[in-house]
Image (cartoon, rainbow, N blue to C red):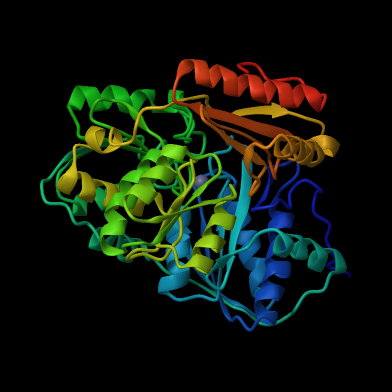
Length: 460
Ligand SMILES: [Zn+2]
C-alpha cells in the first residue's frame, strides 16, 4: 500500500497550513503532515519535535493523528498539550526540540484549523511548506520507531514570562482572552504579576461564544473597553485566538494600534540597545518610523507577514519588530518570536514605570488614516496590477517604496497598495496630516486603480 498523499489544493499556504474542518482539512491531513514534515525533520538531522494545540473542538483529533504521523518517522514527540502558540515556540527553545508544530486556526472562524511549524529556530514558510506537499505526494516518507511523551511546561512558561516584568507601581489591568487558547495561561500569569487583574472570557471555548478572538477588529474590543471604564483600569489587554497577537487599550478607553505599541516599546528597547534596527511592516504609520529615528534607532520597513518579519529580524540582529496586525517580536531579553503574553508583561512594566499609556500613545503626532481596506481582485491580475502601478508612479517621479506592493510618500502623507499573499485581494491604506491631504491620497489610489482597470473599493 502506498502512503502517497495529496492535500486539498487550498491548504498549503504562504505562511501556514490552513483549511476548513470536514471540507478541506481533517485527521488524514494531520497524519500526512506528520509523515511528511517528520521526514524533513529527520533528514535535517532532527530527533525531537514539540507539538501543541489550541482550544478548537477539532484540535485534539488533529493532534492525535499528527503525533501518529510524526512517530512513524522515528521522531520523539514531546506533547505539550493545550495552550497558546507562543508556548509551543517557547517549548522548542526550552526543552529544547529540533522542530515544533502548533495546531491552531488562530483568529479564524470555529470551523477552521491549521498548522504553524518551526524547523530549528526558524518559522517554516513559502518553499518549505510546498516541500511538505511534494514529500507527501511522492510518499517519500522516512520510517522508524518513534515515541511520544507528555510534558507540562505551563508553569515554567509562565515563570519565564514574569521574569522580565520590570514595573514599579502596581496597576489595575483588564484582560480579554476571547475564549481563545491563552485563557489557562492568563489565569496562571495574573496570579504571579503584581497589581489587580480582571480577566474576561478566560474559559477556553472553541465555539467563541462571546466575541471573535481578533483584537484588530474594534467591535471585538467593545466588552473590554466597557469593563476598563467600569473598573477604572490603567490598561486593557486582549489576545487573538492563539496568543501571538496583542491588542491594547489605554486608560481613556482608546485602542492602541499595533504600530503605536511598537513605538512605545521602541522607546524602551532603544535605551538598552542604542542605535538598534527596529522593524515594522509596510502598513505601519510613518509616525512610527519617524519616532524610531527620533529616538536614535534605525527604522526598517519590511514586508507584511509574521514569518518574513521574524526572518528579517534574525538577519539584522534587530531587538524589536512588529506588525500593524499585533504580531510583535521581542529579541531584547526574549527569543524573538511573537508572544502576545510576553508583550503584555513588557507593556505593563513600562506603563508602570513611565505611563500612563495614553501619554505614551500621544507622544506620536496625530495623523488621519484609513483602516486597512481589503478588496477582491482577479487572482491572475493581482500581482501584475501592483507592478503596473509601481512602474507608473515611479515614472511620474514620486517617492516609492516597493518592498511589498507600492507605498508612495507625498507631502500629504502616504498611500499603500499591496497584494495579499494568501487571498485574491488587494489591500489599500492611506495616512495624512490633514483631512484634505487624506482626500488627495485616496484620489491618487482611485486614479491608479482606474488606470489598471480595477474598481476602487468602498470608502476610497
Ligand atoms: Zn494568531
